[in-house]
Length: 120
Image (cartoon, rainbow, N blue to C red; front, side, top):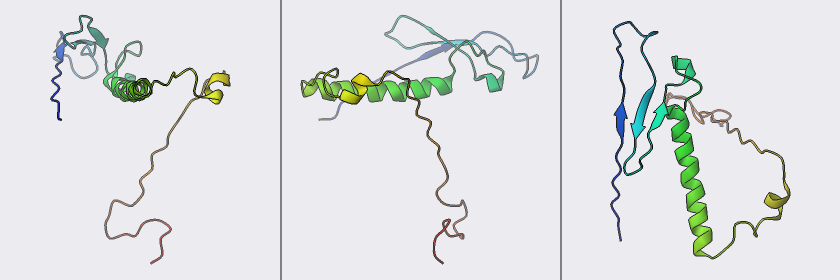
């Protein structure tokens, strides 16, 4: 059975771009009905945004993380597993764990070249 989901968002920005790239306001608001709270956003600080506000790139990472968490919780709930009971390591580690993936190109952009360290 296939379900169709519909989502919407509304963006609101006020300001002017007439003064050039360095001067326009990056802060804007987004609403995602039916939620009633608006989010204040800005661009990444590298693009002259406000570092105190979330930016779209951070929201993309947060959305992916949230989706994975909710999928895990749904699977655990469907199997009636209590997420606090199953993992000795998770229950005993009290340090912050930071995962920093490194994404590297596996093959050169040119199709004429062979992959690195591959036999000719």
